[in-house]
Length: 197
Length: 258
Image 1: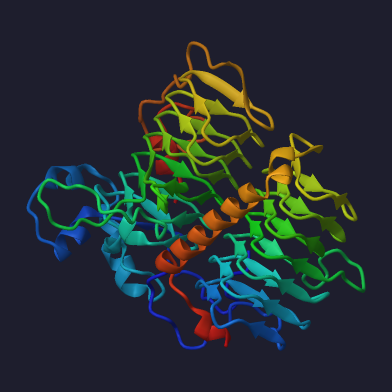
Image 2 (image 1 turned 60 degrees about the horizontal axis):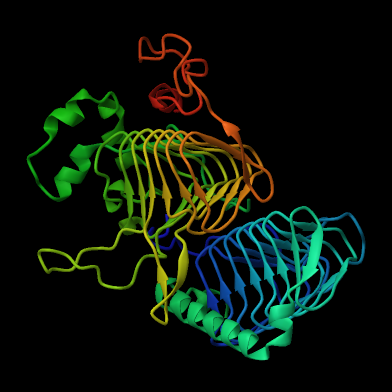
C-alpha cells in the first residue's frame, strides 16, 4: 500500500507525537516508520529507518547514532507501559548499529557497529559493546553486559570474535561495506523525512 | 502493530482478490481468457474495488494470473517488482519488500528496460500474518546488490516468520516464527519446524525436516509427505481445514481463506 496517495494528515497512532525530535537532515525515514513518545529522540546522520519500524520514547530518551539501520518491525526504546515500570532506561545506539527485522532494543546501550539479528532482543538496561553480533532470535535478558567483539549465538552462547578484534583493518572494511549499504538504501527507499521535520 | 486508529473498517471482505480482467483493462491483451473463466473469484471483485477508497489498484502488481488474495492490511512496498503466481494469499501485516530490487541492469534479449523483479511467488502459496519477505543483499563487484528471490508453488509460510532466502522450491512448509537467513536455498518438500533459525547460505536438500537454532537437518519427511488423507482433490467447498496437509496442495486452504 505504499503507492497509495497520501491522505491528508492521517495520524498513524494515538501515542503522542515526539515533541523533542532531533533529526539530522541526512536521515532517511521511510513511509510508515513510527516515532512517538514524550521524551527526546535524537537521530544521527545517514541513519535509515525502514517502514514499520518503531522508535518509542514513552519511558525514556532514545539516541540513535549516525549511520544506523533500523529494519522493518524493529523496535528501539520503550513505549508507555511497555515493562510496567515508572522510570525507563535511556536507549543509546552507537554509530553504524544495525537492528534487523523484528529486533528489539529496549533501553540500554549498544556500541558502534553492533548487529542485532532478526528477531534478536536486547533487554532493558543491557550494555552491548562495540562490533558485537547478536544472532537471530537471541534474547539478552535485562541488565546483561556484553564486551566488545562478542558474538551471541545458539541460545545464549558467547564467544569473542578474535579475528575482528586483532585486525582493525577488517573492522574498517566492514564499516566501509556498511556505508555502501546505506548508500543503496538512499537509492531504493523513498524518503519521507519531511513529515517529521 | 501500530495501525492507523482512524482507518475505517473495510466494507467487504478483508482480502482483495485479483482478476486478470482488471489487468487487461489497463493493457489490453486478448489472451489466456480461458484461465480467468475457470476461476471462481470473478463475480464479486470488480465492484469491490470501485467502492473502497483506501485500496491501491491491484493492477499495479503485475499479477500473472488471477485469484491472488492480498490482505488490505498487508504492507507491500515496491508493488511493481512483485510477481504473484495466482491463487496466492498474502495475509494481514505481511511485509513484502519489493522496493529492495536489483539495481544492476539485467541483460534482456529485446534490449529495452524491464522492471526488475525482486520477489516472485508461485501459485497457491500462503504467507501468514506478520511475516516479512525481503530479498537478500550482498556486496558484489564492490556495490551492494539485491538479488531477486523466488518462492515456489504450494509453499506455506507460518506466522511471524522472516524470509530472506534466495530460493524456496515448491511444497515447502515453514512453521511459525522461523527465520530464514539471506541466500538460503530450500529445495522441494522441506519442512521447517517452528522457531527454527536457518542460517545464511544454508542449502536444505529436498525431503528434509530442519529445526533448531541454528537449524539442522533433524529428519526426513518420508513417504506420504503432502499426500492428503482423503478428499483433498478439490471436491466440494468445505472449510478446508482438514482438506489440506503440510506440503500438499494448498488450493483448498487458499479457497477457504476469505
